Amino acid sequence: MSGHPPPSALSIAADVRRGATTAGALIEETLAAIARVDPSINSFTDVTAARARTEARAVDARRAAGAPLPPLAGVPYAVKNLFDVAGLTTLAGAKVNADHPAAAADATLVARMRNAGAVLVGALNMDEFAYGFTTENSHYGVTRNPHDPTRIAGGSSGGTGAAVAARLVPLALGSDTNGSIRVPSSLCGVWGLKPTFGRLSRRGTFPFVASLDHVGPVAASLPDLAACYDALQGPDVDDDACAQRPVEPVSGAMQRGVADLRIARLSGYFDAHLTPPAAVAVDTVCAALGVTRSVDLGDAAAIGRAAAFVVTASEGGALHLPALRTRRADMEPLSRERFVAGAILPVAWYVKAQRARAWYRARMRTVFADADVLIAAATPCPATPVGAEWLELAGARVPLRPSLGLLTQPISCIGLPVVAAPVAQPGALPVGVQIIAAPWREDLCFRVAAALAAGGVAVAPLPAFHA
Image 1: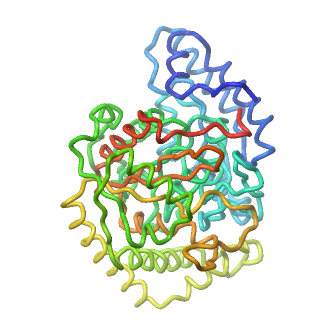
Image 2: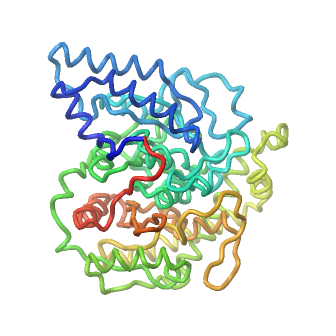
Image 3: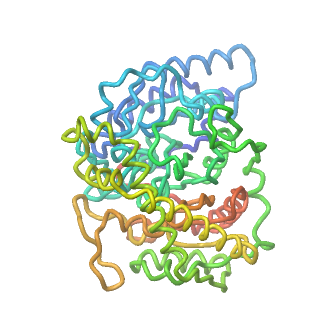
């Protein structure tokens, strides 16, 4: 382990650009760090060393030829193992996928990262088929929290959060259906982005719930998160859900400040489901931003979460019904019965759930008429011990795994953009806060995040296990 924080993605690209180092040297350092540190946290399921060296050589050859370098030149990154990587089997955390043929081509976002000069070093662990919040994968092992390996990294993008928190890579890609980027970002103390539904292409990713699936980046610094997001943007005619909107860079927006923004705290449901550390995180953020106004959605958030539960179970169950019929014993014990339950839900329930989502979306439009940005905790608590089944919350004993999504699920249910900001508390595990805006206003999320980062309120702490 080094005695100082590893460089950011943007500083790496700047060093490669000016010749202070080479992409090849950086990748060798990264591969060595993965070999040294990852056995303690189990974030990687595949290390793509040969591809990484080839991509690094291409970056160095381009510089040697005097050609301009793209924005993320030489930056190592990794992807959740539900992204297609040419030549690699797309596991999606599942044993039943292991005998599938290798992907013939890269997912759209993997291709965009390559075009931006980034170098892929591997695929990352996750909950099977993205149905979970803990990444306690029965097939590929538990991903552990770099801040305390006896605790979970969160999920389902647990490998994504842990690899970035451990500084094995400065950037990684994950997916978020009900909170799967924001939960591990919160528990691992890193920055995460769940963009507006349809903002980033999902082509070449293994699906979970077509109505709810999002993809996005995780990073150890906010400028890196913004730069990665900007590199990923753009329409994709091969993804029906990817809206045909122009690219809207956010890196420049972060310089604009927040004085003109109407920021409110989500109260009621969102304050009722907090342990003291999570409440402190929200209080700290709101105090730093001078937030005095709160918004209580009443029953709307709970209705939205209930709708998301039904939609998730129904679509997920239908998708995996063939595997449930033929290979049920090979599926994840923590989720297969939920898939079975979802497969037999009455169609009328699904229709009602979609109607409830529409009602909830309309309710939120009225909220955003009077507020630009909303603040809420990302998880009810910091990282919990591996194997824990229950959580003490609001004076009740509740099941841990579904409860980790209490605060994220109502937000992704209607596709709102969110930056998850890490709030480090001295002597304690990190816990994140959601910065939420109206659809297509990622720029507002990043402006508020930048204010928190500039004030030292939101920062990704360096964990005990780091490269």
